[in-house]
Image (cartoon, rainbow, N blue to C red; front, side, top):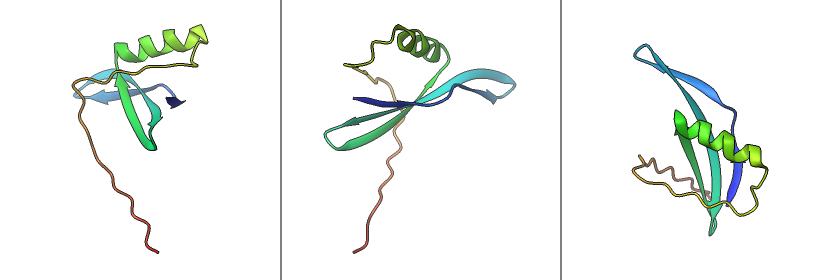
Length: 74
């Protein structure tokens, strides 16, 4: 389930600028954040403009994964 959408920003690297936006998702108790770049940001904005965000399916392919563990000491 899509739980949040960040603010569109510009990212500059090696003299080239591109758009980026972070979306947040949650499923089965797991939380995931995914950063979208370039034309995917435009596609996200087009989708959000429709206003139909109730049953969103997000397919992530060819992603770079960073795992962050948080432990609570009791």
